[in-house]
Length: 286
Image 1 (spheres, rainbow, N blue to C red):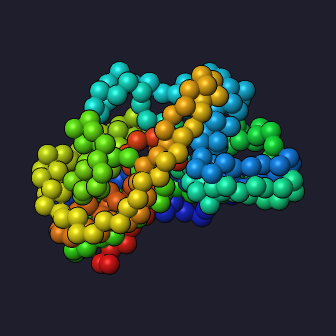
Image 2 (spheres, rainbow, N blue to C red):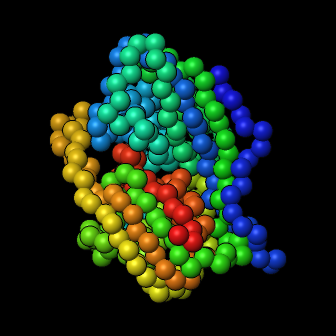
């Protein structure tokens, strides 16, 4: 059922001769299903629906590992958060509002940041027990993004916020995606995921990189706010899922930050990424 790509994909630039490789590693799992019963993905929440289905399945297939995989806790974290970020995100925006009839195929991606050998098999086993659809195959690929290569010469970048995104600065939501805030949230998320699930926290000068990021200018912003919400199946409470979507262009000495944008395409950025928020993509030299 599982198809492995022939070799790990390494994304990055040439390293400085003296630099020790600093990478962000993950598994990309692409799940291919065929519906047995009608499957309807609600608008604004396909990733959250998949998250809920995964949680229910893990209770059945990996009860002992449920907390580690699906509801991790941390004693400390960025901004004093009590819960650790979950070790996965879904990429399912193409299923937004889609209805799948019995017998029809559908697929989605999971980006898995937990580097333990049993992590991917646990996810595959759980989704094999999805009630309304049959898991037909899974494509699995190891991805490594190099973070400390020799900086590229990049003076302009366009970032697209694909799904609703919320960024915070000084404990407040921001209305404009200024680059130092965007980079800061990317850097912190990548470092935290790496510390909890991978090769350890980033060995970088956070302060110095933040100062350089502050010199990058937001030169164009075309964003709009999307309102959405989710209702918890366990508590009945309603949670906001809104945020901004659109594009922003940045100008400055951006070379050293490009690898973090590459990693951010896999991790997402900002609040509630596990619910499908904060998906980004970018172009250079635009």
